[in-house]
Image (cartoon, rainbow, N blue to C red; front, side, top):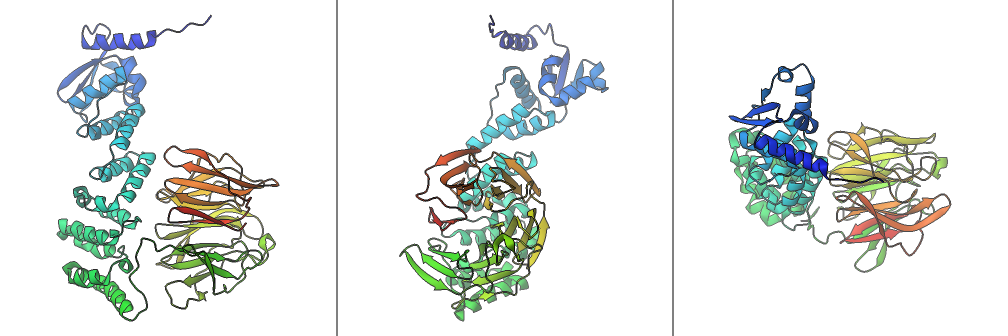
Length: 511
């Protein structure tokens, strides 16, 4: 018969009482911030890698009964020692940053985790930037993602916060890239750049023209451009900024483009090509359920991939005969800003021919992954910078994939499913900041030829095929819970369909 007892807890409680009273079994003293803390080597060395190394290598402290930790204050060390013995710590907005730094220095993962829990629960408009900075510094990726989501959802308030003025130029650029549904967010971005620059104008004015380039002038009203932007001294003193401003104002006066409103602008869906109509393009109006014919593509393409950037459709790759080839690396573009748009083919080609591959847009950069090149499946990936009109190779995925999907969410890329010889349920995530692909929990169902969207902090995997079984099932990945959850099935089974989100609604076509 196996019995259980709580004597393990009792032992630790007894040792904790010993260090605070009689000190009969204490064999080491930690000196920090002018205070002395009697402890037991076996206890603190079992929790802290810093102290374990101190006691088990030929450091002088391993032969002594005391050691100094000058980097940590007395109150912080007292709290940490109490945590080691009791697993409890009182965290506040005043002490949590010191505790996190100490946890990292002493290498106590469980204490670092407690700080992370506190940060997630206390995210607000005043501290989210600071929390994100610390999260990056101490490699807490999931907390960075939580902060990124909060910042994106509350971008207007964050840009106006006092903390924003204290951040470096790279953090400012990061926040200017974020998208938001707030109606006046572009005015807020402009004002935040002005405020940030003037907060330390002598040192920061050299960055102003670079930051100004992140302001999408097309989303600013003509009144704002004329009454606010063109009267700003920082703008007037920069030839680059003035050129951008003049181009925007001139194009409006000539009727080439008009002020764009963010809210409600996405009420049209373009359907491009397909196995039976490879050059055909039609436009669907979600408000009226009407279809309109659009200009045909220049080349008949089966299994290409497309993204939209600044109202410009980039159509890439594909084949004239599916996996039988020949395959394309060419790119053509349809500019929806034009009154009479037509497909243009004078864009740089991808570095590799790709068919049945996946693409998406993240922070103004186009990413393409996997596919088939006429001889075999690909794991290779590349990116396209529309501003520089340049393709660049990035790190390959861990797996070769065709008929998969690529989705952007929270500043990361997610490659889902596809075919690597058989339908797969694996999912991997790419972080452009460190250039690494890492696996995340697999889907519940193997899916090749699926489609996918990101909506409300979740990634949806829709339809597809597994073996000979075409699927109507749908599942979603919650980015906070890191778990796949079931979603009601579609009305029809769909393989190699397409999907998008309009005003919070998922639309699925074809297949």
